[in-house]
Every structure is written in C-alpha cells, then in structure tokens.
Length: 128
Ligand code: 5GP
Image (cartoon, rainbow, N blue to C red; front, side):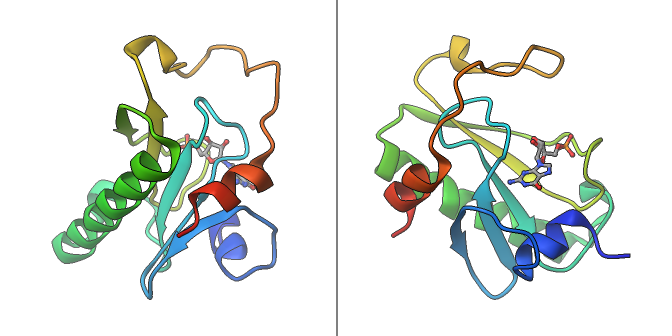
C-alpha cells in the first residue's frame, strides 16, 4: 500500500508544495513546529532513511540542502535546522525547521502550537 507521502506526491492528497525535482518532493508539514517547517521526501519509497542506498541518501541530503537555502532566502530566517524522526510516517523524509533562535524549536511531545499558520500563503512566499 502506498504511503501517505506517496499519495501526497501523486496529488491524491492535497499539500502545500514548496519545491520538487525529478526524484524529490518538498512540502509544508501539516503540524509545523516553526513557520515554514518543511518535509523533504524522496519520490521513491524507503521505509527508514538510514537503510537507503548511499547514492539515494546522498541525493536526498543534497535536495534538503537546496530546500534549506530556499527557505532561508525566502523567509529570511537565521538558520534552517534539520532532524530525522520517522515514527509517524514510514516513508523516509528530512524535517527542515526555519529558526531565528534555539528556543524556536518545539520538540516532540510538546503540545501543538495554538495558532495555525496560513500554509497556502506561506507556500506561495517560499516557491521560487
Ligand atoms: P515523523 O514520521 O518524522 O515522526 O513525522 C511525520 C511528519 O509528517 C509529522 O511532522 C506530521 O505532522 C507530518 N505529516 C503527517 N501526515 C501529513 C500530511 O498528510 N500532510 C502533511 N503536510 N504533513 C503530514
């Protein structure tokens, strides 16, 4: 059965896409920890990122680097932080978190932000 991210990539589930190339897809996280929280995903499904073949893993990191530069330039943040979790969705992905200070990052287990950002507006700001 295809993962939820494969359904998003195929357009079967809506998302706010910010970037893609032939092998990768980047879109805003539906439950953002910071403004512009983005997931970078390989179009080919791999359950666990660190089981990916080296070449595919390196290509994913390279895609994340491009998306991080896009987020930094469009959102004007100081740094884009990154992490890998993967417990919720078994389709390899890298979280990119635009930040201006360490305290901007909400870690797992913390309650969701009370105000929901307008993801459509944000995606339009980020897209090239
Ligand atoms: P992880 O697998 O790294 O623990 O978390 C998966 C991430 O995907 C979470 O941050 C969650 O908010 C995000 N996510 C899960 N389902 C969807 C979805 O349908 N759309 C979007 N945009 N993000 C999702």
